[in-house]
Image 1 (cartoon, rainbow, N blue to C red):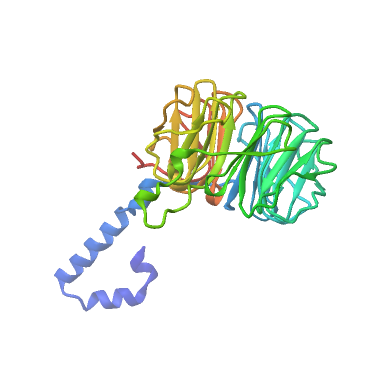
Image 2: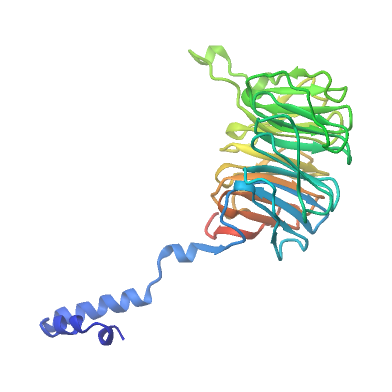
Length: 354
């Protein structure tokens, strides 16, 4: 077939010595029978190729993913099929949160808060009065919620987002994550190890400090700042965790009065952490994945479970078994066995990760 398609090649071959011709034929046969090494290690499946920043889920089947330039995609059958939902804004969207199968919010750039009451068939923009980037949002019922972002922004609503009021104090810090256990008690974490706690619904915020992550002056000529924290999660008013840069995980058993660093052996930044029952999970840069099977007391790296080296930005578990992870270049992962194994719904799979 090759000779039939290229007459010039036939003329050149006639001028060749027999041993030259044999060598050429051998090279052609080797090339035809060989496959690039990458094809053995990589497979691809795609829902989208855009970067995905956040995921919200309700039950075992419904999930909403937010991403680059107003991207919203939704599944109602556990990831078998996906639909694009139209956003009233083309700005980057960072985090969805759903209180049930129909009512949810998404936050993003320029103070954006989007709201739906029909599972995302339609989204309406809410007026927050802010132009700051909002990274995270948390509701404890259909009316009461908080959102956090840049420049120390904390926003609060008691009417489902019809009106938002500022609770922050203008600190020049990124607040990356917010978690409320009830209408009164909540935590915010952010840049340089910042932790704030409220016991009155956010009217007053008190700083909490983890001494274990503050660099000691004796070890440095110019001590670096504490590692930024990107995720906070509580399972009770007393017991919670936060995760962040350099594989940092800290834990409290007294509502944050004291925080202690947890040994994880994680190498890279951790962007999202969650605990349900005896299971715990955290994900981050370059496919970093750590897991706990004793309720968040101890954590181990699980390199072979997630077959990617892309950054993983957000994770949500709706119970001890069913969870989602999203990240770079359209990465969507799904677990139905408590994070022991992950199915790649979208993105590049690296089969040879050990």
